[in-house]
Image 1 (spheres, one colour):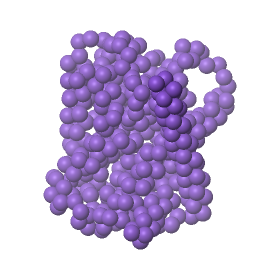
Image 2: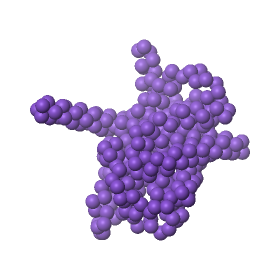
Image 3: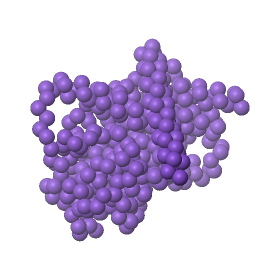
Image 4: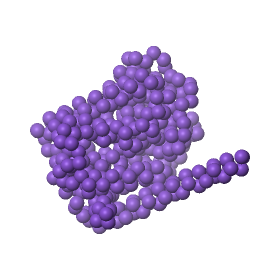
Length: 369
């Protein structure tokens, strides 16, 4: 048992070292983008037309560092502000599937081709979902409040309290705010899921072995591998950034690049926790179409990736395995220690706060009785 635990920790740590430098840069980029692409920007660009809104919502959503939980209050804000359902759906799809930080991390762990095809596939998925929903949708917006505790508990996005005020601060002040936001609010929100992603990758590498013998052959080879990626990704509560090291582990253990892409698209865009809130925002049948399109277009992009891989250089299992096992230089080690320490601190702080809140609720209920 101790041998397995040690191997899990070692495999997870090797993944962190391989990812740390790219993740540090990606977080900084995401923080800077958050200064210029926020709720005020969304309101400015949307409302131009049914199909144009879908395109703008997709393009703005792709670089934003919001996970499948924190995107919900922003999507609800869009609906209440009069944004059509099609644009809301495209934003709900494109935003959690990828982001500036996850693209940088994808380049490091999965190679340049996957770093390009991932946002392209996210664009196609979101555009398709938004256009289909625009075809079915007859109402411009909903004024009902739908975001519950699941959504409001996230802190990945700035508050909209000042959304209608003109920001006249100097550019250097905004840049400093963006960097501060990246390594405080954003990293704090991502930390539990990021650590979970690294831990899961270590578990996968340790227990599945080099031949992934724990998975049936039909779920890891050929057409069945796309279905296997859907089964693995559909229920997981995991963001675009934390899904990347897990995807690298799947690639290293034999999944095709196309199946890995399916996991990268389906995993962040769909999870049971957020789908309950999404249903309240866009409606039941819209969620059915949402899921079918995310899965369908993701599989199509996965098939295309494997076919196109015959003509270009795509990351192989050997390349991914090398990324997971190579040590890296001193900078990678220092950033790995720093990020792990911060992530551990934020995760522990979040746990203690929730524990304290639960204790207070129990005490209040006891006193009331």
